[in-house]
Length: 283
Ligand code: 8Y7
Image 1 (cartoon, rainbow, N blue to C red):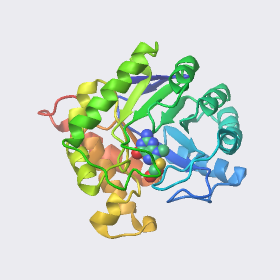
Image 2 (tube, rainbow, N blue to C red):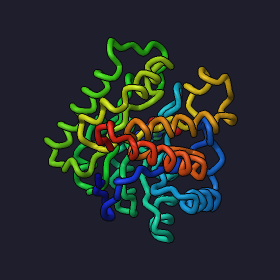
Image 3 (cartoon, protein in one colour):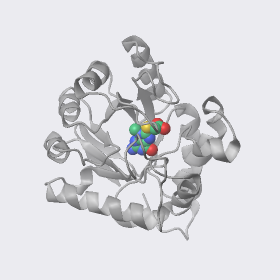
């Protein structure tokens, strides 16, 4: 499958890794590390060398309980980095935002993709995203970051997540956005308890019926706290295992902090998936 974006087309016939770069003082796993613009640039270039096909740049923490920040502060954090990366390298830049203002400015500055954990539900987001020509990641979340982990409940987490993503896909189509620009994401950890995350990962292939590539983010997430008991800086092995399982179950884009290790895991899992002659073609 292919993904159309603001600068061309990304080939997803083999799964790829999206490197994570947060320019925030408070993100749970890399908060505060990349506030200096040159540090951030250096880290982005390093992830690209390690094999990241895209770099996702965020200026607003979406960790559980995080406070929202205003659009102009968010823009000031991400725009200089988007601009320089797009200008000084061929790296595909994704901007992690729900703000129409930030979407417009960043795509104008060279971003290829918009990664919205709110699936373009903020007022004006759908229209702003439609006008950019960027690739769009639609993610499922139950609730809002401030409250999402307080009491997530589902009758059937796979069916409900898939049906929400189907509705957002339809909203995009109605706004004139071609489906070839869209990827969908079940939103691991966003209003989900450990059992919900496990069920979603085990049932990931069922998302394939949406007909769009799947993006998955499990890197360093708290699911690994519950599975391994390890703190956020000791979750590399667990993250790599989850990345491999996600690809085996159909993920086309894996969002990860540890790019080199994840690239290897993704290659291994993709080879096994390709050899699975019984498997229905997904991703
Ligand atoms: C995800 C994400 C985060 C994810 C997509 C973290 C911004 C928390 N997680 N975007 N963002 N999917 N599409 O652990 O799973 O990095 S933030």
